[in-house]
Image (cartoon, rainbow, N blue to C red; front, side, top):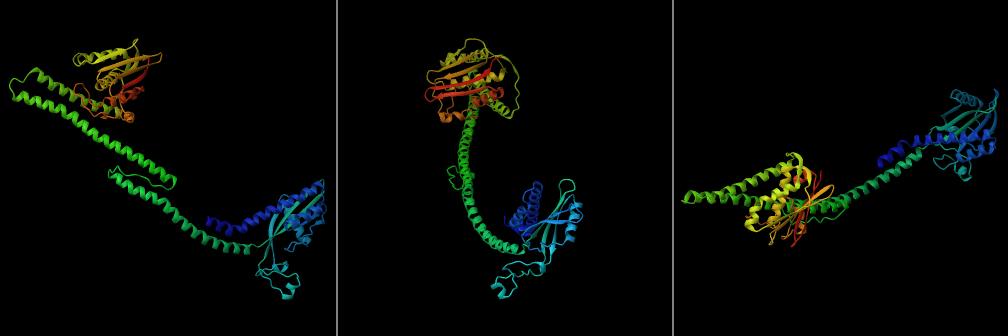
Length: 476
């Protein structure tokens, strides 16, 4: 801003003043020509304009070869052109004619021709000053610039007027020197003020950032007990709130990571231990090579294979490597087929599984992937069905969509944990059941498969009253 002021107030002040003065002269000349054309009291207009704008105005009748002066302003232009000689008038007239009737330019008048009343750089005797007489301003032998505007005004027929306006362009050297001194003081004051202000603002900005930086280093060392409470300007407050949220999410992620390691270790270690144990028994003890013991090894190997396959399927789903092979599928028949897999579980363990539907419904889906979704929902309900061992699957259909609900009467899911149940290996009760098949990846696989199908899904749960998992698809 200071540089801007220096450039425009010092370097371009003279130029700007000259341009403004030129525009002012042209405007005043236009008012005079309008008065001449309209037949107003030209003398009053000329005198009014010349007094208010410090200009000398001459209006000549140029209809004949010899011009005659019609109007002369009463104002005495300090440039000394009040009694301009006719030779120069004719010269300006020809210039105006050569420039389509209008001509503007500036000329210089030697200071010896300048006589004004003033108090600056006065070289006059004491008596002259006391007596209030006229005296000359000496401006170090400089010349004064005078602006001249000439216009030839065509009226009717051969009737013609020549308007000549002169105005002094006051030397602005003294003004520039005054402004320069003022700008020096203003620059010094504002530079000092800017330095102080910059120091205070930078301290205000940097202090909360320094505090945040110190705290975030502790967070990088996995210290989740830190608190971002730096308070300052709005952005620092928002950054602190965002970092507090980030800290909470990192802590949750770290807890999930630890649970992931524990769950994977348990799910892998248990079948391996069973396989190793029964294998050693068969090897070391005669007569233990029974079909039952071999079946245990086979079951545990299948359980281990199922876990590995689920891990691979989930990785492929999340990476987008699996493409759906859609076809027309009767979702009602798929549910009935999956129910048949649980016949042994119903007979031996006393589970009560029921499927409620009123008609067969067809959807466009990948048959195998849709079966995985239904199977995982039912299997998850069996794992958490509670003491009554009841799982109810309901099919609700209208003209456009079908909704499948899988309900259990178990312990339910706390409200604050509902958003995490779709994460892989996340378990609400952290309990591993051996009586039913499960890898801990079911709901995460379900989520990704349903996302690929563009289906809606969710869960309704109340702690102590069980849960209802559901999904919706378009009917074809």
